[in-house]
Structures are given as structure tokens and as C-alpha cells.
Image (cartoon, rainbow, N blue to C red; front, side, top):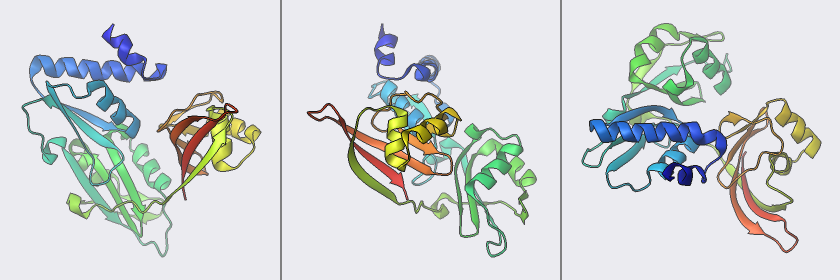
Length: 259
């Protein structure tokens, strides 16, 4: 019954992750040993916070570096004190000659993936002004430093840095308020990216659209407040809030798009 009450607040496809959280909760409850997760995206962090809530028997903390989007979580008994070092994270930095080589976030992430490193093992990745920074779990740092020695034509060498040297995001988000006929994914993509609904539908069906970091190919997928959207080659956006409906039964929404 408790499970069903939790499930009703989330989408069907999120149930396996909810089950995982409940399993971690049981594990900590029985062993009294804190549980350290792999990296979680913002949606997973929100689900984790919601499921655990303000349970008096547990403390829940997240860390991925200052201002980070992707973070590891620690679920611990309420009496435990969680420190930054407990997250076992390392900030790695490499430089490259940006005057001669142009690298993108996708280039660097692709290089990591080609080494067989799972996405869950690395956190935020920053590529800016000739500098590459990545937050990684401690167990793969030596592997990265030994094997990640080049991206495209750039030779690189990663060094360990302190987290107070982590670059901060310079992203600028532009907000807008509007009304839409429905909260379908194709309708919202059409509105935010100023394209036709037909083109929005094609992008979705081809697997070029992600919602909360997962590909969604269903044009009728229903969005909710807080959902993050990513459209290939068109950037990221967010359905910030659904304010209700107008007299003509249209939804009043606030959206935000990365400039």
C-alpha cells in the first residue's frame, strides 16, 4: 500500500528507480552502514528526495562539486555526519590548445565513453576556454589518467585539482510565459523551439528529444512542471511551471531555454 502511494506521484517508467531507492533504504536500515550511490541526474535526485522525504531515521546528502548538476548521494542513519570526502569524488583537469583545436562537450564525453567508462561513473563535464574538467568517482581516476590521453587531435594529460578550482557554469537561461493547448511533448517542443508541430513530432520520433536525460519517442508524452528537455542540435530547455488553465482551457506555462 505504501509503495502504491509513492508510485502515484511518479511516472510508470520511474518505478524501477523508486524500487532501487526503497532497497537502499532497507539496506541502510538493517546494516546501519551509509549507502553511496553512483552519479544521479537532477530528476533522480528529486525522486530520491521525495521518496525519502524528511524521514527521521535517515540523513540524505548530495555532492558533485560546487554548482554541479550531476551528483552522488549518500543515504545514512540519522546520527551519521556526512563529509565531502565521503562521496569519494575527484576533480580532474586537462588543458588543450584552443587556438588550434576546437573541442565540444560531445567530443570529450564521446572519448570517455569510448574507453568503456559508464556515464554513471562521471559527473559534470566542463569544456571551456581550452580547459577540460570532469568530476569522477575515485575508483576510476587512475584509469582515466592512464588512458584518456587525447581527444580528436588534442593531446591531453589530466591532473587532480581541488574542488575550489572547479569552473562554474556560464549558462544563461531565457524565460517565457505562454499558453498551450496541451502538455504533450510535441506541443511544448513546438512552442519552445519555434518550429512546426510536424517537425517537432519528427524530431521526437527519430529519438532526437530527451526528457529528464532520457530519450522519449512518444509525441503524446505528458510533461510536468520541472521537466528538462533536450533537443539534438537545438539545445536544452525546461518546463519550469504549469500555472493552471485559462477560461478557454489552455494551459498557462512558464518555460526556460538555454541561450
